[in-house]
Image (cartoon, rainbow over all chains, first blue to last red; front, side, top):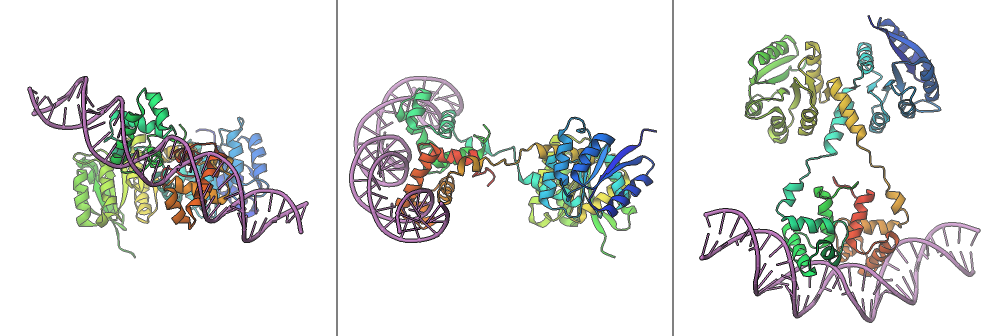
Length: 223
Length: 223
DNA sequence: ACCCGCCTCCGCCCGGTGGTGGAGACGCCG
DNA sequence: CGGCGTCTCCACCACCGGGCGGAGGCGGGT
């Protein structure tokens, strides 16, 4: 059998800390290697005890669980530690911040003991696990966010190649004169293309063209 | 006791379909209400049988599970159906596409029977559930999305509140006249604000203001 | 050969945009 | 109180931007 999974419990409530410790030690393949009552303590203890998993409360004095997670994951010595966040409240801010801080899991404190132990094993194995409500909202957030299949082509494939060139430069902030120089065209030609862009894209002025360029993904913010 | 959870099984392999059906019917609170061997079949059957949960394979003839999910979630009559994706492979493309299509869960076919039944109950309750490996990668993907690190204030905090108002409307494509109407100002005032924006932000025209609005995050693409 | 779409260019007109300079009202603060 | 910043408004002017109509070359498709 493999070495037991080393678990560190960080929570400012002694009672909860104790019961988690007992729970962990009832499992033959898990061993509690320490308790911390603040985030700072958790970080230093983790350096000494080298746990595989830290059960971390969100709300703790001195250093909250989110920030403690961030520090653990950022420091070379402890960056292989998996953090399982345990909280009373599954508030969005907590969840997103925790996941970004590098947590591998997010469970509510009313999780059945057996599930919690299973979660520790999952997290120790390098996988991740979330409470169902958290999963749902993460999915919603994910689905709502970044639609890579931008309707780029959808809206812009009516344009000719040249028109797309001009649109791109407009979206870079160039004037008609600058575009004509840039593409070795006369200003008249540029104006023609611009007019075609207006009618094809159903807009009024170049400012609205810039909007379309961003909204369709022809231009991206970081670019 | 509540009414049993109605489950529809969609998979092109008859053997698998059958065993899932048997499994579902062993649970007293679950009832299998139909089987579909294609995505199209799943969609039409879901309209008749009104299941609470559809167990959906990704790879199916005629209409794949992703697209079938999208159709189920899009149609008013079946949009309250929860879809639980079951697949052999937890490929990234499948996962992301499925979640965006509106799936409430994503499990591998080697999931223990008990876990699968539990997952069906979770999904039927309106929550969500993912296989641990899927969860891990969703979190990574989510964390990698570099949250709007608002350089907004950095560049735009030299602006007065009113100027930001005007900038926002410019970035929506409004003309000076429209802005004046929108903010109950005279066009002269709007022009003043716009001029201030030009000098403060070191740009030449409103098209370039739109660019800045997007680049600083004052305006975001999804909005 | 013919048509059609794209790219290129031209002239004319005019209106919104943008530059400059100034002014009054209000609230804040030393 | 007297400055200071913000918000509001005005007038004048120049020019770029945009609408409109027209035209020629060029390549692809029927």
